[in-house]
Image (cartoon, rainbow, N blue to C red; front, side, top):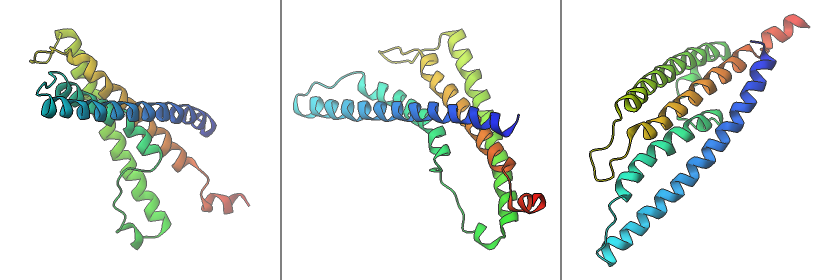
Length: 174
């Protein structure tokens, strides 16, 4: 894939990631409000709800998996960099490439495993063992979608960073 193609795909992925992050924020707002209302109902009216704890637990998966790719594209993931200060730019670039490759492998395995688990949940009609009897497949879909976005974001970001013109290539051209 050419750099311009990767760039245009990545621009679309970035927009989708931003939409997902916004959705994640709205879900967080709903979860916060639901817990607040449940606390009021429980302690002031002695009328707790039966759904808030379970539903908010499931929605946390949506919050996490919908926001992870956006956090990656914005550079908000945690990085340990105190050792990198000891190396020159070329070594740092190699370390970053190796790290990105491991992260892509991890996100691909995560995508694979969550896809497999979601498929079984659909096929076997898994449900929660609670009064709500929530179908797990609809809960797990967020993990598959979020893992896919994370993998594609890692892939595009790494391709653009390491196919970009480096200072060495610039002097060779000149």
